[in-house]
Image (cartoon, rainbow, N blue to C red):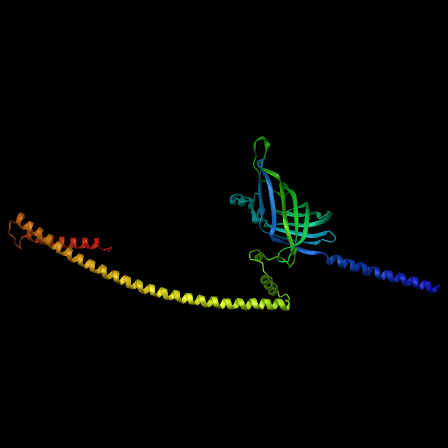
Length: 358
């Protein structure tokens, strides 16, 4: 009897000891299955739209935002969702309208630069669909918001980085956030609708394992992946290290060759520039010599022509006015000499200025 009692006590103690350890392992395992995901803005969007003139819609988006969440895909659990949007990054494709939306009538971005959302409750509905409730802070106002989101993935990109994609949509009422600006229309209608539809998609990647933006702009190759791996100080296999070393050696040799070619081209260019300068100086000297000769010849011819003109003018004065009675003491004789001199000077200067462009 005592033996059976001891065995029963031992069994109960064993079970009591084992149960808490098992529970602790389950809790630990459950916590480890959560993935801390951040938003990759490169392939994420936040859109909005609102009714305009009862028929059309004004559509736009925000271009600057960030956020993160914790997700357990195995147990379909979602928590700790937080998103921060820069109010000044609103974009509708119209600069004047965007400027108005940033001012006091709407977002008042200078006073309230951030729009934030933080989840307070999440619930799995079915498949990959979740119901999320949280607090949205917009223009300094706090309001409870509920939305649904579908989380798809995981899927790996060409760079072996894992991504999830969360699609979401919800409506908000402008008056809840003091967005009261409007214009009246006929029949008691208004210019802008009261309901704003928010929708979009977030690319979610594990913290520290985000696909770099630059990788989308360059061709993918094995060498590129190895270089990225080495830059992040990840361990390379012997074969990978040899391949990367061979590539680096080849790259350095090409770099040296290109540098030599560049120096040679620079030297040739400098030599050509010096020759061109010498040729230019020679041509300038040649042109100056020709121009000087031409001007000198024209001046001599102009002077001769002016002398003959002056002589003809003086003869006119002597014959027609003085009647061949030329006397240096008479004023008219002095005037005729001055006139002849002036004619020579004016004629020479005129010809010189006419020929100056040559």
